[in-house]
Length: 96
Image 1 (cartoon, rainbow, N blue to C red):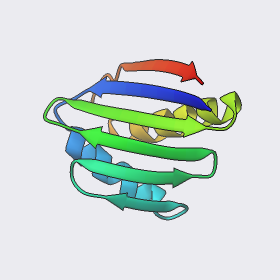
Image 2 (image 1 turned 90 degrees about the vertical axis):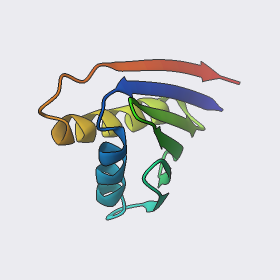
Image 3 (image 1 turned 90 degrees about the horizontal axis):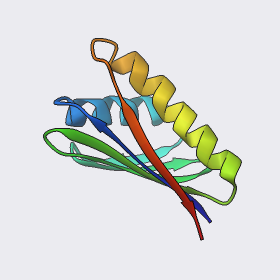
Image 4 (image 1 turned 180 degrees about the vertical axis):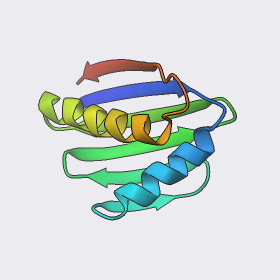
């Protein structure tokens, strides 16, 4: 199993979590509150967490390529929603 943990520092974490989830829900199963989301991407599940200053992502996939695809989907969409900010992503990948 391949895993990734990512984070973004932003004062708009809950707003972005909700925007991402509403958008993703058009194509995949999503369950979310303003502070926690469970997204069923085709490449694997992802949990998104939001607090006052940080948006966190915890994803997993059977394949390393799935993790890269997941990160790409998250980054491309969040960059569109957060265009007013300079978003800096921090990712840590691991495997079992």
